[in-house]
Length: 541
Image (cartoon, rainbow, N blue to C red; front, side):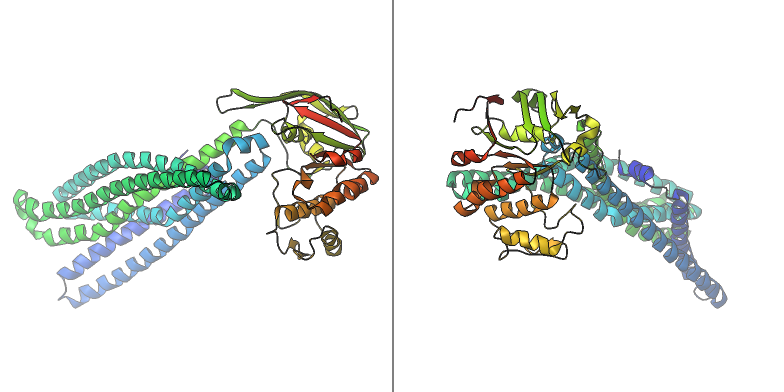
């Protein structure tokens, strides 16, 4: 779907009104040209010149009004389409499952949704100006026809030939735009690695150098593509400018020899050609702007189509209540899940997993790196939907229409967690209670809660986890899931986590499932389950 199809689909705009206004604008422009030419030929006739001045003022007012109308309307249309597209795709992103987002990649989504929509938005003025200028050229050419049909035919022929050559170059430009888009995604991924992996790169100079070399290589490849694209644009622009002068030369040097009577209107036709050079230049500038906007539109639509294609469930993100505030048992029956590459080939499998967790239990999950603990947690919380097997609350098997209600039972802090600066989803939070929690978790000197947001989230990893814990406690869910929460805590808060916090949650009837390696705190768990190679294996104390 290109930009024009998208505009037609997304809006109920009176296209005829805009086309009519554009036509009036073009006619006014051609009228101004004709009036000026007539006035120049009758400069000594005062009465005639006064009438022409009145007509000139009318034509100018019509031109100004229609220009303003079209620019305002079409800018509003394009920005409305961009806003609608952003909102719809953002909504599809939040309704997608975790695997879809992981498959598409953050860099890919960021690039298309930010840079792509920015290109469409920024190109709007140039495209509108090109549309306006095209209408001006059209009516100016018709004015030339009233002066000389031969001049009209030659002008039309040269313009058609010029447009054909221009568009043939434009195909190469579109190919380069596609290459640069994908290369920009790669470059963005490299920058993301540089920022997210800053600590790891600092500890390994060779890794840092390799990452830097990769970033520089991508930057140079992107530069080369853009330089080549710019060269093609330059060729097209120079060709279009040269074409204008060739057109003038034809009118001045060739036509007088073909048509003896042509000399009578040569001044008016030359003036008309000079008059349309500006609008034609605007059309020339507008074509690459449209090409870029068109390609960006198709790229954004491709992202939307991919989100639709990879979406494996019909989730509703309407506000849901937990599937069960009170329950006796949470169960996993024969849960199996396989990671696959983009070609569908299996990479790593988990399961079959069978597990019973009683309400109010503290369960510790242990195992080596890569044993499947994090995948188990995502399956348990239904962030991943299993290939086979079922989740059940007491005797009720969770179905795919109850996913959100099931997820609402959990408050979780994963290994890779995101910290929001506001209490999204926790409405009317009591500031005093929030700040008391911050004090209890040793954060009162680092941040405080006021006006619905935290004053500072630029904290150490351990402090960020404690702030995430405060948010999780405020959510007050039946089940709490923690993935190595204590790993970055100092001895005081590590002890507080196992000896006080988990026991307080248990005392309130909460169920806790925590991934941990702190074996000297295992006595505080009701159950310890071990994972190895994606399966539960017997745990030996």
